[in-house]
Length: 291
Image (cartoon, rainbow, N blue to C red; front, top):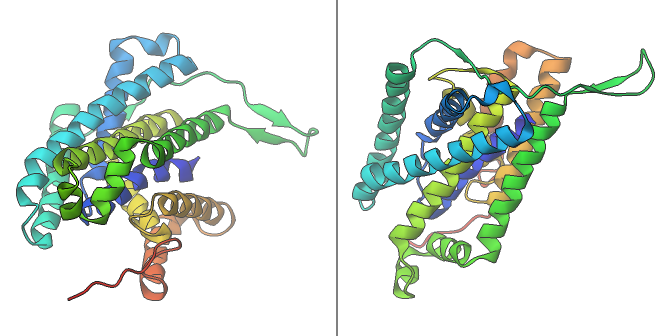
């Protein structure tokens, strides 16, 4: 479950990097916005009174729509004017947008943590005999299935639709894609919207699985998802999913069998090792550049 949530965030990082060679450090805050959209939508429509699976899907779709619009606005106002500027300018802008969203969240939502109200009441699944039984939380399964459904949908969009073909063409070469009649600005905006919508879905799923949200909740998961994207090979969609599940499982094994206090350090340790020994990641491919 944890790996699937990281994957939804990491896919936004890897798609934007594949298109623009940009690390969108504001992506974690879009994930936070998705969680708060789900929080207020649940209260507005009074869905907490009947916390069903259908209510969860509805809230998740609303959060995805709000975050897609947010991603479009961020790309249009913050990144597009600097597209031909040096990369350091874009990097600094991304950090600035991240801080703006963090402190705006504290201003509008309040700095105190909030309880996510949409909690479907499912009975735990018990397998095996008493004393040796395995207890499975159905919420974990629901989160995993919904996340996998979104990942499969994204894979279909990228490899089976005209939009996906255009995204891959722009990722390969902006100028050539433009000469072939592809509206590169619209494709880049669509990429931001797709990635941001997945982050919004992750925010709602985290609220359901770990029912505490706050305006700074996007910082650490965002950084971990970035580490997962680098682990799998940033710019590679399948690699981002593989790296995220690897990181999620590694964290859970570390917490269960060794030292829970080192949980947050694990992602950055993996990032350092990957950059030292395999900079392209697990599924990344080295592409030499002519200078």
